[in-house]
Image (cartoon, rainbow, N blue to C red):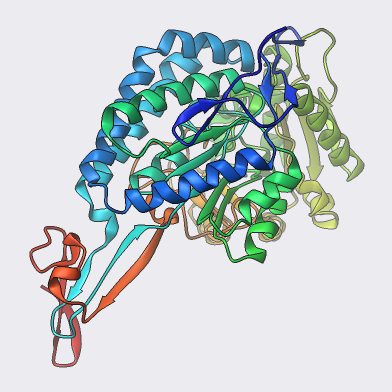
Length: 524
């Protein structure tokens, strides 16, 4: 019998206190994999929290250079163990080694680790402000233990033990308790082994990063509401996120959620006239990438009714029909996609193509295009915004510009929204009205560009209004800004110079000195 994997708690790999276990599955073959992983109980959580509390105290006095060194060493360890990581993630997720895992996701993971190191070392994310006249000083500093729940669809770049939330939390000076996703536990174990080696080499507290594979719902809710937790990050379904949000907010814990998003794309008449066939291809490229299992995958396409829209619908349906269906991550994802497509049909959507699971052992769903009129959408707007997470898209054709704007006004919050318009000024008047509405509906507004790529840029916003996230003021991607989710604004009023943090003394290299001149506050 295969031994149950150890958990990473309190600076060591130790046997879980649980006597329950689970196995991952290969989504290509539909078979269970051999390795056993523990479903941790509260004893594991409690031990991790105790260790994280002690590590948080140590990290308050750990030089930023040491934290930066850990993140850089972690990136190097991932690169040194790339072959094993790629092979394991491929088996657990069905995602292709190349280009997805090798050429895109693993480099993204190491890049954001190094970006986090640079932010920790450089320090401007702290937003230091010193008012010498009033002798008041403030900056952002680490909160304390952060719990990170990783999603199913990015085994490296958003993994709880290696992804962007972990990087941001640690770069801000916090220890992380990672709750790995049960769809890729062996991948998470390999990542955690790399983190463990980097902790040993760098000198950060050995409980800076801990990892549990799986929890019961009850223990997950108890974990996020524990007094020792300072903040939580979650990427996943709306249902799961809202349960955690309620538990965290009952006890005043900040929780940062990335949940559902339809990522609407509006195709204005001039754009359809200029390049309708090209847009059909671009839509298929974007909507079917990763079998539609990206948080920024377009679920909703909006046009004005007319012959150009009909030509687009036919061309897009042809693209969906001729392209192979991708592998979904799990049997649960397959059943969930089918259930939500059925819910959209029950709400009034017509199936143009697809709409059913495919036969065979692979977790696979037919590429699906649904369709509704603008009037139908307005009659049942909430039900027609169910997120069909996967290779399914809904086309909405509005009768006229006024109805299109009304449809947009009924949209929930999204991560992204995109508008395609003509290359001349034909669409400019309608664009202004459309963009005016979409600007309040999404965290990132795109023009003439599909939303599936999320750049590792300090200007990037990977966030948005509810229910895309739990708070529109924060981003999960974009260092250094993403660090502020896991930081507290600390103010020191009339504190003696030798008692101040080094960053807040008068000779602090990143300080913004504010002075009051003629009753007004000015920098410098």
